[in-house]
Image (cartoon, rainbow, N blue to C red; front, top):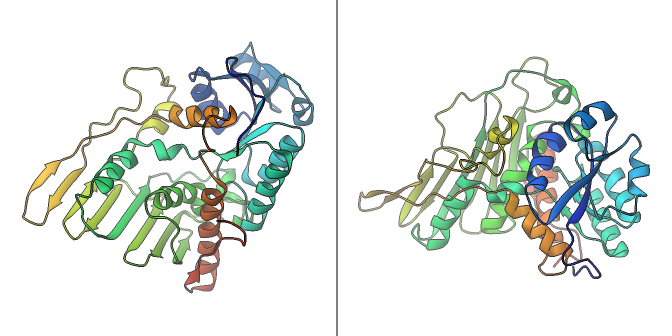
Length: 356
C-alpha cells in the first residue's frame, strides 16, 4: 500500500494507547531512539505515571480524545489483546496509520475485517513483528539462505523461559488472547513463515503446567511443509540448556544456542543507543556431514530496523513491513493451532479467500 501526502522531512508523530510493559518498556525507547519518529502523545489511565516518565509528552485520559488530535500521524495499540480490534478500528476511522502489538487480533476473521477497513480508509495497518530483527533469527537465517545446509528437512524453534509467577494476564481465559501460544506464538510463527512460507497443516498441543494458570504456559506444534517439518515449542518452565534454533539439512546442521537479548535489555532499562545494545557473542555452529564443526557469523539484533521499515512504508517509499498475507498467515496458524489442540487433530491451514 502506498501512502500519499506524508511529509518527507518532519518526524512521524506517534500516539501510544497504553502505558503498560509493552508501551513503556518497548515502544517508547525504540520509537524515541529512531530519528524518523517522535512520541508526542500517550493515552493511559495512569496519567501521573506517564507525566513522571515523559514530561514533554501530551497525556490523554480518554483514548477517543487522542484519536481526534490532528497532530498525530501514527497510533500504536499497546493494550490487552481483546481490545486490539476496538482501538485499531477507531484509529483507522480517525484517519491515523496504525501499528498493533501482537497478537494482532483474537481470530482470523477479525484480522481480515481489520485489514479490509485499512484498505477502505487508505491508512497503513501493521503488526509489531520486531523479532524478525532478533540476532539469533538473523544469524540462522543467513546460514539457511547461504545454502550451506542443503535441502532442509527439519526446522526447530524453541522459545523458552523460566517464570513461575502467575499474574492477572495468566489468570485470563484463552478466549481473551492470553497464554503462551498467543503471546509468543505470533513471533515464532512469523519467523517460520518468513523463512519457508505458509505451512499446509498443524498438529498442536497446549498445556497449563503452572498451578493457578488459566491460560496455556506450554505449547508444542508440528507443522507440515511439502518436503520438511517445522517444530515450534514454547514453555514457561525451562531453566536453560535448550537451543533456540536447530535446523537440519542434507548437507549440514546449524544450531544457535542462545536467544536474542534485546527484550531483556529493554526491560532492564538499557537504551537502544547503548554500545552493547543488541550484541550477541553466541555464534551459530555449523555441523557438516564430513564431521567439521565451524562457528558462523553472528548478527547484531536491532528492533529499530522494524520502525525504519515502517517509516519508509508510511512515507510511500517501501512496502508495509508486515503485509496482509504475512498478518493473515500468522493468524491462520494461530487459530488452527488452537483448534488442533482443543480437538486433538491435525488442522489444514488456509488463508481467507482473495489473499494472493
